[in-house]
Length: 163
Ligand code: MG
Image (cartoon, rainbow, N blue to C red; front, side, top):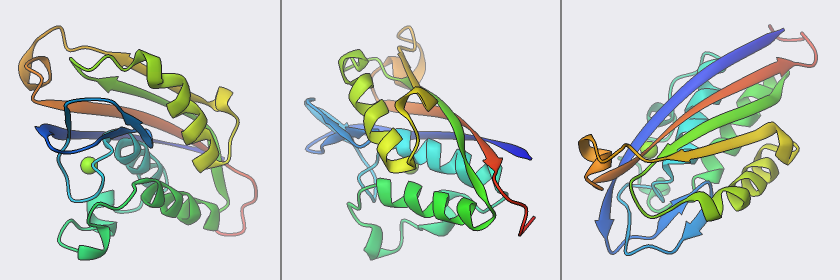
């Protein structure tokens, strides 16, 4: 039994915030604005996991009106989603994601993000793939106003105790 989910997220780039993607802090004059640490990549992956198991999205589980999640590391949200999946016997087969950013250049940090996400999700690095692309200067991403992330996660079921 396998299930697939898709996730998308975008956050605005502003001065005075850290830029954190895939749990990795990236040197940048601007960072992503959000209630938590605004890690758009981990949010997209978390939503893909939740989507695969038919759960409400990250904003429902961790509302931005809740002070507990203020500046919270987003790895926690992903771990929680994976625990929900594991309760139904589902584990990560593979993760594929795309980061869309005009700047800064993300390529030098991709390997570190993959290692970090593999550790968070308890899989091999070879099961985590991340690409970075620009938006060819088009739209809000192209103007450098924000960074977007897309993710697909495939889960497989080890046992069928719980549907
Ligand atoms: Mg988000």
